[in-house]
Length: 325
Image (cartoon, rainbow, N blue to C red; front, top):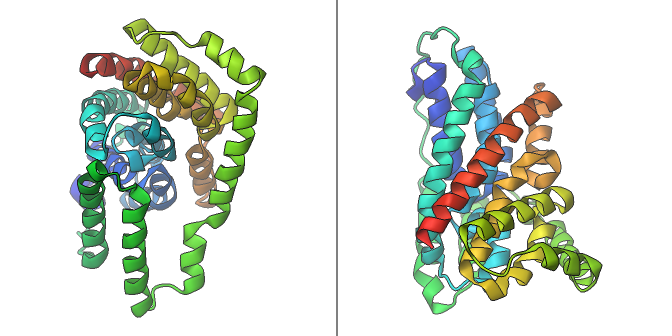
């Protein structure tokens, strides 16, 4: 991205924006904040320009760009059993919605960070020629094709991703890139246990007062106003309970209304979770990543972006969804 920008901050933001959206869609939102954000900061430092626009592009895309594929966000995977859509069908419906969201998010970032982007152009740095890791790249492509091709036959995504993970671990072990312990750590089994326990807790709450209270607020149809209300309710729940808890609570309640209602909830659970630090784990990981690199974000800066971008992107997304469903 540094090479493509030719020393221009605006071009750097555009490149980072597209790359962050792609990484989120293919590798999930956590990969964007953990893997890409430090790289973006390094690229901006190498250019001698502000890293704020790029780092906030990573944050916004981590949540908003996770709409495209079921594997982009765990919220999507948790909702899939309640949707009458295949892997490819999900992407077809959400692609135009994501396109609208990307336009809104980019315009907001350009306006909010116009001061950082107005810095004078820097001399273009010497281009880099990094080696392309062919096996991992091919493995990711095969994985995505496998998701789309096998979904109509009822094959769950974890079978495909699990097979690809075994191949990549074997490839990396032969080249001494990692140990077995590294591979187990990357699988994050404690997080799987956390989600399981979270599901049990939310199931208990859903059967009581909380489930009744949310059910009373949710509409009984899928008109535009109803879809907007569903997205807003999901946003509020995501920021109060985290988006994973909110997904486990609200999606089963919306299942009788069908696909459009559940997708509207995902808009709130994904885009809406960018409203506060507690909305998603990705937000907290992003903040920790910046702090480790000596650039901790201020609360004022975070909310200046989130309070403007989130409502605008959410309304635009609901409008687009109402037109395609």
